Length: 289
Ligand SMILES: CCCC/C=C/CC(=O)SCCNC(=O)CCNC(=O)[C@H](O)C(C)(C)COP(=O)(O)OP(=O)(O)OC[C@H]1O[C@@H](n2cnc3c(N)ncnc32)[C@H](O)[C@@H]1OP(=O)(O)O
Image (cartoon, rainbow, N blue to C red; front, side, top):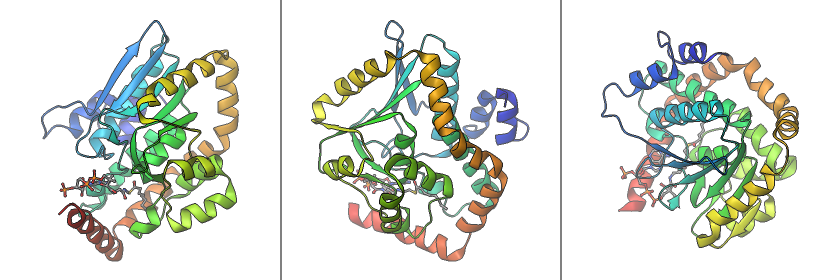
């Protein structure tokens, strides 16, 4: 779908992703939640998450991620993309709970469409994508990292990764599940997803949800080394192979995008789910206190 059509689909009336962002941030001061540094000579860009305090994937953050991805895809000098958190400690805390709690159905629908768009773009990204996981990586954070071609995690026992949705009383949608199954296999996913497991680095490596664990101070150099290895493969062959492997999973969501949005809105609007999210948010606050 063309850029303008995608923007219109996400927010009716908007002519481009720029217009989407303008609308999303209209009431707020413009800020950059995503910082992109490009090494043109190496053909590699680094996308750093900067959405304090915990890089939650708010509607604004998701929209900025999509816009920046689109820009990089159009920049033919960039062949590889590394994702990381600007501040070590939290890679991303996942979807923004405040976009899923106490809002109206129109907001839930707008948010979910944006999250779908981000996943579709990441999962089909023609660039080599590497996640440098330098902090906690639950739920939606884990999903983003699993869309990448390779995951390098810092060896810090405080950091965990996984799809922990059931622990919040919510259900990961089928395309989260599909991404997990494609990453760690069916049986491991049955255990992981039902129990909402969050794995520390050594276990994450054992189950295969990350590909490499390295000392924290080497996480970026390790990601660059992996990138160099992947960039040695001719782009056209690697891109077609990636597309072939991922197409069935992508098509599965594309076929039922609207139904998935309706399902999300109806699920998240339930009193019992809203109550559960409220308790989870309170638990996070109490933990802090
Ligand atoms: C049908 C539904 C399908 C949708 C599926 C959902 C997928 C998701 O991604 S749901 C989000 C799941 N995320 C989590 O469970 C992570 C929750 N957060 C944490 O565990 C910790 O915050 C984390 C380990 C990431 C970082 O720990 P700390 O550094 O100790 O920070 P705090 O816990 O003190 O948090 C600071 C501040 O941020 C708020 N917060 C945390 N996570 C989120 C979030 N995902 N969305 C929105 N806000 C979040 C937290 O409540 C604190 O707020 P204040 O108390 O107001 O400062």
